[in-house]
Amino acid sequence: MLIVSINKEGSPLVLHRNHISIIHPPDQEPSVRLFFIFEISILVRMIMWLAPMDGITNAAYRIVVKQIFEKYNKEHELWMWTEFMNAEGYVREPQRLVHHIIKTDYEDNTIAQIYGGDHEDLVKTAKDIAEKYPSFSGIELNIGCPSPKVMACGGGAGMMREKEKTLELMKRLRDVCGLLPFSMKTRAGLTEDDKQAQKEFIIASAEFCQTLSIHGRTYKQWHSGDVDWQMIYDIKEAVGDKALVIGNGGVKSYEHALELKHNLDGIMIAQAAIADPWIFVPHEPTPAERRETILFHLKLMIIAFDYYHKNLHFTEKFTQPSYEQWMNEVENFDISRYDVGKSVIEYRKYLFNYVGGLTGSKEFKRIAATIRDYQPLVDAVNEFFATLS
Ligand SMILES: Cc1cc2nc3c(=O)[nH]c(=O)nc-3n(C[C@H](O)[C@H](O)[C@H](O)COP(=O)(O)O)c2cc1C
Image 1 (cartoon, rainbow, N blue to C red):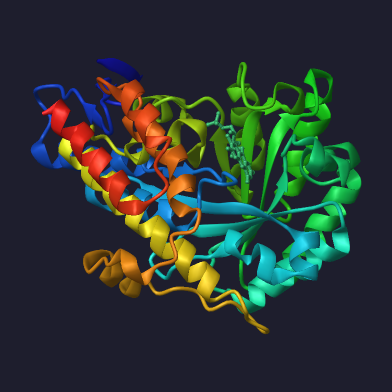
Image 2 (cartoon, rainbow, N blue to C red):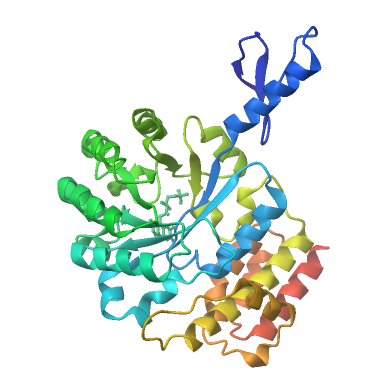
């Protein structure tokens, strides 16, 4: 039991797994208690955020996460992100990159993320997404990716080197997004020495952004090491209601996310969410549930890859898929209708995480790594889970 505060009646507020309760003094009326419980439940409502991850957070995975969230988390809100999409590539050859922003009508609260170093291409891309794909809940600029390829073209974390120019760009992006909110995701700075300037930059960005997502590590730290949560809390304090502030970095579990919330609007999870869609809910899956999710996700991944390849040859815009149609296909799944391509191989990165830590998973992974077709993989999964029960 963790006592987080004392209310004005002198009663301790107690933080539980996913809610706060009050230890009441014996003389309080029941109606007064109800009032306090209602007030507090609003106070702790927050956004759980599936971070953008290139190669991971595609439509199939977002559907898996959202279905689980809807079933097991009634307290909070879920927001999700696409994988990031390169603006220069999209402007020249949208057919090659549009798969980064495929989304069904089920995934509301999903933001399309873009990156790049060419400001004109970024503006064109944001405008194009806003006009052609208005079902997104927003468009976001990546100002944090540390990959040398992305930095080399002046994009991602490279934008932190030119903070003034990046602020001007954000203003332009906000203007072309029309009715879609514009947001940005960034880091704690380039290095420790850059933190103060970065803090000022992020606070100034609130002028143009609906949401500021902050990975509390510097560019130098990449994806590991200490996360500066205090810096993120201080930014929220300074920004107030001007923008939502979402904290990110090193979140290990659902409980950990609740502990870190403090004054933030939400908490974002990346690496720990790869193939752990239950991290956003206060629920541990049984082996049977895990097996069902694995097989459901595998079917969805095949359906999504096939849909993408069959609809690539567009001129004006890509036709976004229908969730109902995909669910029908899952229900009446017939592998002979699909070009499996590389989807089974691509699925391994999720599968290996789904089974990680289970008894015998090492041997299972060794076998699964040699499988390239749907049915043999399903058989292997079923065999493996039979050994667990
Ligand atoms: C495989 C992978 C892909 C990522 N792709 C993106 C991306 O497309 N856009 C982005 O803003 N951040 C991306 N990130 C960074 C994460 O969104 C997140 O900021 C970072 O991993 C820190 O969060 P964590 O400690 O919970 O992993 C990626 C991270 C990983 C591990």
